[in-house]
Amino acid sequence: MNELQDALNGTVSQAVIAAMRWSTPWWWVCTAVALTTLALINVLPWRVPPAKEAEYGIWEVLKIALRRAAVYALVALVLIFWPGMYFATVAALGNAPGQGHVWFVDYVSRQAWRWGWLLPAGLLLGWTGRIASARYLTPKMSRLVQRLVVRQEDHKQSDIRNEVGRLKARDFDPRRHRRDGQVFIGLDAGGKPMFLAAETFRATHMQIVGPTRFGKGVVLGVMLEQAIEQGHSVVYIDPKADAFIPYIMAEACERAGQRFIYIDLGNEDTRWAPFEGGAPRDRRSRICACFGLNNTGDGSDFYKSRERAILDTIMPRSGTSIAGLRAALEQRGEDGKPLKESASRLYDNLVEFGMLPSLNPKKGGGNKIGEALKAGATIYVRGSLDDPTIRRATQAFVTEVIQEARRLAPERTRQLTLAIDELKFMISQEVSDALATIAGFKVNMVLLHQSIHDLRSPEDRSLNVQAIESGVLVNCQVKLLYRASDPETAEWASLLSGTKIVRVTKSASVEYNRFGGEAYTPKRMLSDLEVPVISPNEMLSLSPRVGVLYAPERLAEVVYTCFVKADTARVLYRKPVAKLASEESATDV
Image (cartoon, rainbow, N blue to C red):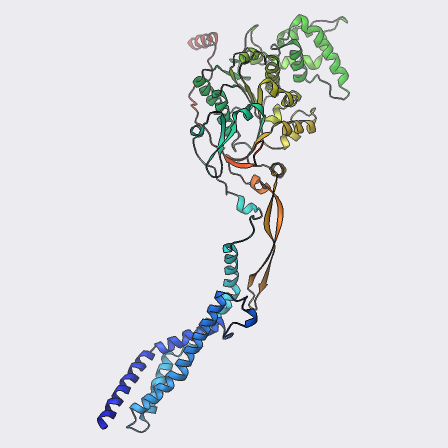
């Protein structure tokens, strides 16, 4: 019997020793974890309230499970573990009266001194975590959940902070996307080619709008190259001297076997007589428009009509060369006075034009627009925005192209694509009128300018601004708009895109807890809203070479454009032989 009791005491002693070893420090750690858990997630509730079963999600159910596990662990660790250890210790050391009790109290005291700090630390950690979670983590998690929720809405309101830099320019080779019967414009958002039907390009005028260096010249070079390759005769009016387009045009003409004519209105080597081409009435019309002799409805109309009468008198005998008209005005009239005294505006302008060698070729010389159009040639015209005389001469060139294209339509065998850059300075009543009528004469126009304000404040103050703006917007059914440089242009582009019905969040509610943290509630209110297909914010934040294409029978759509490579080492024109000989002789001297 004693042997059995000794064996039992030995087993109990071993169990007590193993439990004592485990408790150092794991009892304290486990108890601290349980206290931390209860301090972090609160002690109640212990079950899901029947009235709120529908509101409780998986996180609330998980907290109840953790809460129960922590309480059960504390019961086991505090109310079962130490009493059991106490009685087992007393039983194991019972031969010496009071020894088991004293040893147990001494052991627990030493452990409490060493590890007891874990218990208040666990409580403090839990309370701190609870406050931090409620005040800072809960709002962040609420925002994250809002982003991850599968919503019923299909649209987010435009925010300029999200739009800036969203649509980046893309590099690609436009020549790889050519297709017969189509004019390649660029790539859509998915990287697929975007085209205009060649018939649409021929029959419809086009408007390209955007600030300098944002892509107007890029897409124009792509389109003009294709127009030449598709058999068009192209005239490009370039008042600011593009660095690449003339080379692109010249190279395309060489491949197509087409004549390329380079005219620089500020260079005496490429001459053109502004008033000698076309029918007599057309020449007179150009002179009156170029020198401001048309009536404008003010007090100066009387003097303008008198100067026009003098012009009609001298034209039959002087012709319409600048030198001839000027010489005729220097002659005396019936009153014995020089005609120039009664036609000072006309004479002064002729003097200014006479100072430019490029506008005064020798008799019968210079480039002939009518002949070039009949031959199906392509013409690049370089003007200047800095020189008012060259600027007016450039406008006269545009007018002559329009007049000759109309007059020679039965004789012309090619479609004519007329591209005019810097429309603010080049727009005229003739251009505005041509937009409504010229398409029937195998001519399509491409107009380029920087903003809607260019149409509302043209350089020529005598124009009817409302009529000019309406004429351009109505007759240019194809539009490519790059980044808007001002809110008015952005708003106009947005309205032009039309609207769509979208479902958006009309309102969302939030609530805050006792620690000052705010979180979204599950309730939101949706509504249908009419919004533009292209928002003003999108137009204000487009990257260079990224635009929006508007065309008949299709929605406004973002398009990525890219340049074609140009051989800038190509010779665009050759100086006359006599000019080269004179330069060589001057060098020898």
